[in-house]
Length: 205
Image 1: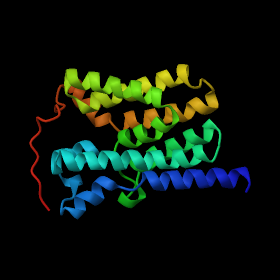
Image 2: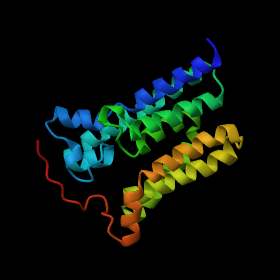
Image 3: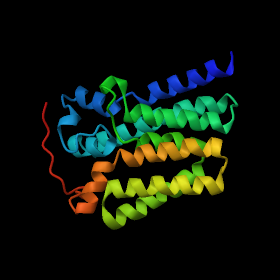
Image 4: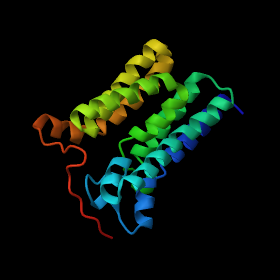
């Protein structure tokens, strides 16, 4: 198998794995389209608001796994870091732009956590710790997520690889996740962002 074909397979598999909309599917199984409630997002945070924290946790785990699986396969195949990072990036892109939802999707945080934890558990651990600190102080999931992503991108450069060929994948994934939070960023600037647990959400079929 030539390099181009192999690269295409990694990209396609990772993208399709990431694009599985677990939040939407689980919501539908419970008779709810989560896109019509709360923030309208299919991610774990909105699912927990709409369907409860237990269901939100399930979605969080599944979304993380769909990012981790492609990277694990590439890693166990003994392929270089560049290909692992490629798999991580396209898993995140799949979640954010799912073809099963008209190329719309979530914000990629959980999927990114799963994918990049496989690549560097230490960097991921630092990012998660930062998320926890910011969240405990502000109660803003969005701000905590954005800060954690930025921290991962920075520490990856110094702790794992500063190679441009490799670092570009981490940077692009981080930028995609942050850009997907643009509405949250606008609300944060305006002081209109809701703190977690303060938003009342009504459920329905």
